[in-house]
Length: 298
Image 1 (cartoon, helix red, strand yellow):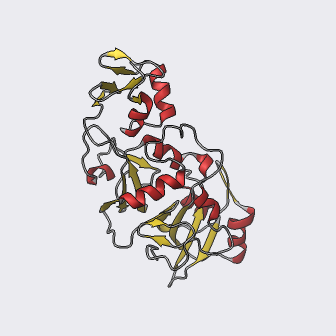
Image 2: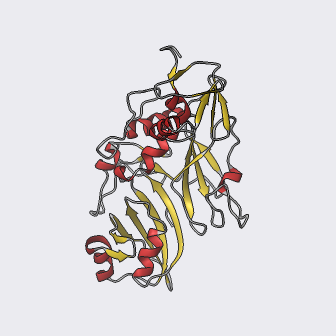
Image 3: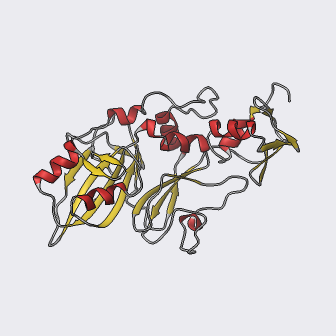
């Protein structure tokens, strides 16, 4: 290959195979070929080249490879997986079909949890949003059976709740009231351990009867997005997201994860109860004040 064209790992990442770092590992392991020949690290590809990896084949330049991001309002009763031995309904069944690319789920929600799911065609973007180093904020509306005492709220916010896989502390915990035996809370944390919100309330003796994710990082669940429906981010909103994670469109210099969290999260509030910047469309605007139009109240 000559020095023209784009780096192979970047093309694969943009096509949704995985992060650039992962693609470099695939290339080194001999899992990628270009025009029928084994690919090598540092290889560049040009329009018309045939790239094959993991039983998928793409033709470079055959389609628009711009990064796409889709928001999906997951209902309860769907699984976030393409392969399920029980043949349950999958969130991927509802998504627009792609040619030569695939939708990558950013994080998961369990079978009985509803709310915001984010999908992208960019493995690099997915990696940056899910990597623990970023500590991306996840916010949930939680309905439990019973009500928290002041001691339990202090424990969840300050001392932490001990689970089998380690201590959990909520970054934010708000009482949203309730009627009868059910009580609503709004919680925020910066990790994505499996069923961590449910397990934390269970450990406090408060079984969760409903759980809904309403925000992931700077992206809110749009209030007009009904369950089972999807909406794609606009170019302006996409630019905000890419800027937030430090991944400029077409920028080959951003190959490794930054050593600090995204600046939007650093500016957001923690345990004080002070609300972060207002939402702009479906994406939270950094540094803008006012009432959020995309917040979802339980």
